[in-house]
Length: 167
Image (cartoon, rainbow, N blue to C red; front, side, top):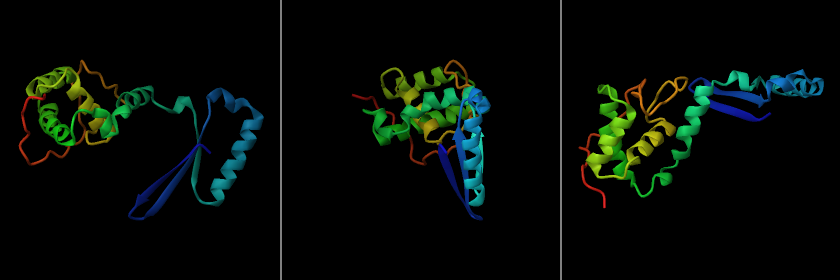
């Protein structure tokens, strides 16, 4: 089994066990024998078990995760501070919700507004996506030359965003 996902819900804990395999390997009888052992093991523990192949995973989801995930950890945004990241998010969020501008234009405007190096605000967007502060339909490719479509209204801090030149 490659991973077990534990979900805590008000009704209790739900677990899903998954094994990953290339679709072509499912024709191998020995592989299928091992999977049957796994299936019985997890079934006796009342855990939902399943096989996931590359055919089950949406390529847009994979590409979006690969694009955003490297910026999950806030330390990857250095030299931006947590306060500055929060201020950038407070400026970008209402604009992303209200304005019909490509993501690259929104982030470029924000870079200019804060006196940041080109692309700094885009790294903040990637962080917001990776940490799920911004939620999008991950099945739709995230493209910088297009408008980003948030599917939930993120929280915006009540403090006014500080607009000050970096450096």
